[in-house]
Length: 314
Image (cartoon, rainbow, N blue to C red; front, side, top):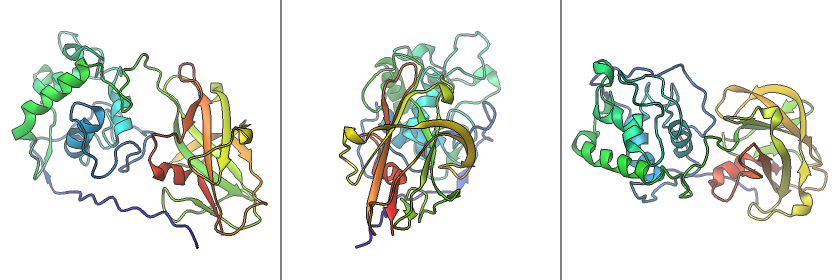
């Protein structure tokens, strides 16, 4: 039987906009290394505590702030996913300063009164920037629930601005993130049946695997302990298969979000032992200055990220 990876998210997206004021940028356009429109932390139909980053994303950031032309990846903060929301908010410097110079960061763990996020939701910055959000969907219930969301934001920050694992950040050095995975045969990228689907390879072929990573503090070439493991079971990896990734030379290819990015880490992979319909799952491990032996995908990643790292033989 041929293995397919099809998922239905069951999400209805309302595109009609009711614009109260034009959404303005807090900075230049960004390319964010997190899954666009598909979240690797939150799952469809999950019920979240609205005082967690998952609940804030599901109930506020995604439907109210990530609308078209605003915080949908055009500029920071990026509210497309739980990860991008968290990483572009917590301990991240502001772009627009208030007159008194009170705020330096968007979210300061344990200090809601020092966090620009909450201030922007309550006060017109300098009297000319408007109160966030500047625009709303036609069916938004935010005006009626504004006070409740302000309290939830306040409580989340004062509780330590915890991530999806319930941990408060000890540093602004976030773990490496994947920008793209390419499987090359004869220098040509293997095709996928969908963005997050396994790469398709013919029996008997052996690909080169290339990984594109991003890190907020560490240059990619300075990442340490970069290894790769593989398995025919996505939940079980034998440590005996762990091998080092090769560093360089750099290649520029398409990434996860259909934009070009730089690929630096790579390795040849022997596919000769696999037969039709076999699926091989890959997992990389890498360290920056703070996050030691960080795995991508890991146990908290959604299944679609795991299939993106997979190879299917035909």
